Length: 447
Image (cartoon, rainbow, N blue to C red; front, side):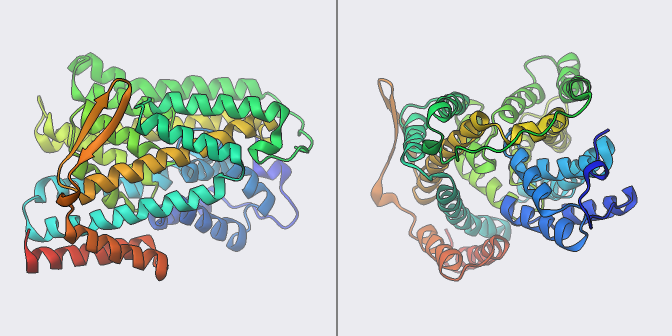
């Protein structure tokens, strides 16, 4: 088993499994602020305070977490756990990173489903919608600054936006096309992808790496698909639990770039294809996910809960919602841990692979275009009452009445923007303030 002790730098300390368990549980309970905040907290705890891993190895682990689908912060925790204590360490870190937030999100989903119509709940959700719009804009700016280093990458982002917004291309096709473009460009002109010509020296391969990877793949795939297969056997292939399991399993294989990249695709599928929820409810779900610890992709659990809650037979709505939420969480996060355990034995060689780095840079650029699509989609559905999807041949666009803008929501969005961009307040604070203002607006002004 490959562990950090075999290549630990001078001054690094080796924790016991019990010590690591306590720290991973603490991180899971306090991991607010999205991937940037979560990664920063892990760096502070693991590198600066505990000194369980040094700076170069932490950055190496972070690079690896960006190479595969799934929430990068959870994969980072899983990989560092694997470095410290092998498979059991990786499982512990990955599960504890998600579990506290998943339990909180389940409670919020129950409150959402059962508390609609209560003025305080409706008012809070009204305010949170405005905060969500600003949060997505902030993510677009932050990721765009980091990813669009060259004109080629900017062009890939633009093409991705046109492809998903006007041509309605499936998100997986955009990811594959971007990866292929980055791979080919990096072969001849790495500078166009923001890469250096010197990629360094490849590390020697890990002994027995193929056996380790093969074992992890077999066990991981079996664990991933077991609940879906059980649902098919017991409830039939047309049951909502099966639909949820299959949809979010597909999502888990193309979830490059974090939750914001997937939200537009997921929202459009959940709202327009499966009819599990409405567009405003999708915005509500993102707002609730922003208030919980753990990965932002936990918003998928909210979607799964509502899907089960509204198509409950043969269960009660609450039981069906809980089971569907559990199915969603399982098929969302099990694959991301699978990628870590399969790829970990090869990570040193992957780090210096220029072609793979080019593909990743192109995917990240495409993600910016997809997030721009999400920003426009959210803005239309948050600010205007009626938004209709229209088509002309292969083109798709959204129609709305400019005079139908919701001035109350617009005012709240402006306030949220001032808090976020002028005063640089944190996400949790912005969401909390906007929820309070939403309650005040509903109670005082109605509507």
